[in-house]
Length: 268
Image (cartoon, rainbow, N blue to C red; front, side, top):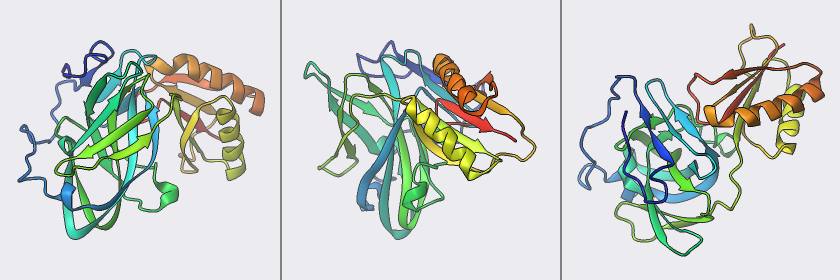
């Protein structure tokens, strides 16, 4: 078990990562300016969206918050242009600066990142598997790139400033006061079913981050998978879906690669 060194306000609220004895192939030393020229060379960096989650899992480890009422992981989705043939971004390249409601200043660093295979705006939140490490890195390709950074954030923060290594001016972005639980919905039925489910979930004030129609054709019935800190929210969503579709969903604790709080399977 690894305990992160974090800000004074989040010290008791965030911990991770559980690796079960497995090692991730990330360099054991921090990246330096000599090894990370790309972050200065990327152009047109923009924050295109965000969502909140209580945990992020990949094939080897999970990071999560221990008190979702106080701290969440903020996932920032960004776009940028790279004029070189290819390059890398590193977790230490990025830092958040922000102020609490009492005007005290704070910082947080990137704990996970991923570069998307999809570059179109409508797929910007469909990011794929995160690399989780203080020194995580991911390749960028020539041209337009979309990538995501995961950093913890306290509940009283509404505006953040994203700094990147070697660049003086930050990106300022408003995340607002709400910390909606994040949801992914997938089905093997049809688009109409997917749209109905999305509307029902959103009416409950949940953030449907992504949807798909790629659920395995062998899956039947409705299943709701949830993280430890989102069980009550999953049960509330279950009631909503039962009223809409007339069948009681199966609820199950999540044990899968995911960057959201709740995953919904709508099977035939």
